[in-house]
Image (cartoon, rainbow, N blue to C red; front, side, top):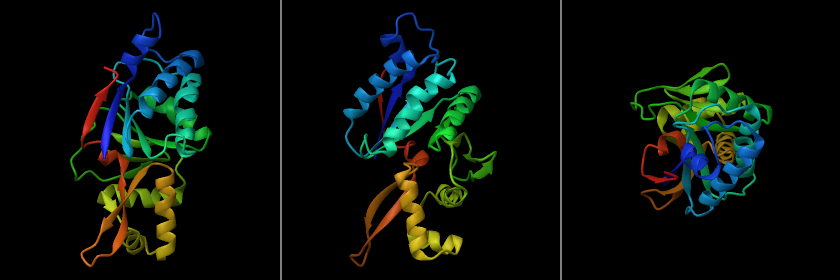
Length: 220
């Protein structure tokens, strides 16, 4: 699955006159969101859309709500079809403001500081209500039972419902429901895999790992 990178600072400079690179009002946020949605609509599905914050300054609550809360809400509502979001190159202040805005609406998305690439041996942990793996963390709210499931996927890279059921001592249908809910939340990617005996099964992969694959740049 391809990852398309949109550089927020470059879009701001081309669309908002006199900008300093800060995201500080709903008006600025509405302009940015409109341009992002135009770009996203052109990407083939499925794909990951990486919103790159490199060079962006302040992100206030109003702008975070106007851009990222609205976009994640629309993503979960199916308006962007089979696409996934990650936010990268975030400062600690940017992460916290976006986290609070998403948490208030019970939404969640992956966020990362620099550098993005991690050794495969890095394990995940819960920290202050966020699931953290190296520079990656969940921004917003993840229900505890889904956090346990997501942690298994993060640490293994990919899982099936059967593997999750075995790892957490769950009934198979319970494991399957948890994975479906994480996919609906756009925190994991689901694809079908053909087995050696000709059967088929769904495999679930963490979106943060997928972004380390094939990338295409935009908004530069």
